[in-house]
Image (cartoon, helix red, strand yellow):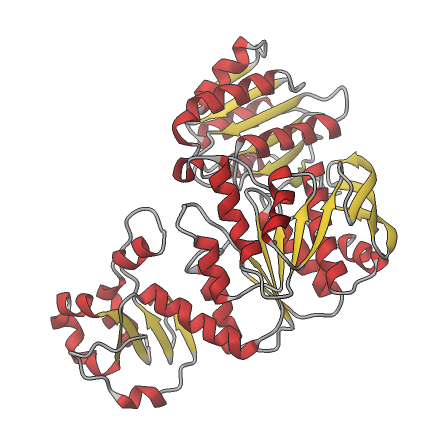
Length: 477
């Protein structure tokens, strides 16, 4: 943090004891250091959109007990009348988010324990949770970012927990990106990973990156950001991921199902949704795994976590034991069974064409043959200039996938529905919002049905689930 030369820096600030850090004035507690982000910082740090200028909330942060606040010098001049009474408790920075990240980097250096970083176009949060769970089962105390706080603000916010909670033995941190501005490389400067897990490269955020090759290069920043001597864990079933081994001179551990790999799965069985078993093989032997998640994509996520466990010296039996105690994360393939005899797969956290078709394949594979298979599919976002064509392609694929009914929700999902009808799926309809879709599904669902709700937070497809839970009771078993 650079003190502005035109302002008198109060040396007494150096002796202030800071209890914690806050970026939202409403959450400030006594003794906190408040970082007042503003639009220039968000623009400089790859955030899309317009954001509130937190400088105007600095007085209220002090009213709530903040010890000091970090702000931009130019913002101080704009708000001088309100901020002058607090001038002796202000720290000036050229870029407040960069200062926030720099502080996190110093806290990480003082902690200095292993970091496992996870990235990919889909499945990051699930793989991060599985990895943290597996490593935690070995007795390690694991720091992880909550939810999907994986960007230039959420990542340092997680790391700063180490300032007051230093007892963690390792960290498992999800790293995301959505622009071509080397976001993952920036995160790696905060916490250079000892182990980097690369899940997949898919046409997600192509609106901002333009080509699949640019998405690959952005994801590969994680491998390039490894510490000297670090380990890259690569998905052998994704050619764009396995090619990243050329960008890494250190150790590589591969995982996969379809291609030869160091950590692999065979003899996959799915008795019903939420009950998958497979044989886990690592260089140290094999063990049978019972996983409370459905779909081949989740087996791959479990293999990524298993590869991390292997890197930390865990035996196959210990890894299998850990995976056997996993609980499905909310809204990511969560299986909900209802008292009236139908089943719903809640995968409403995010959506893209590849993820949609993987979940539909899971639906068709796992549903009883005589069940009615219903898909509620929300509009897919950030797909670039070809978004209409991509939705139409998805519609044609859905028509051939073996489902019985499609309900498209919002915007370009209408293109998906139209293409599905043209390809032979007669029972396909469109609705403008998730609230309406929830009412439709609630009214038509019956015993034996299996319903997949696949969407994104932007479309709010979780409201379909909320409607079903409000009007139909969960099964007791």
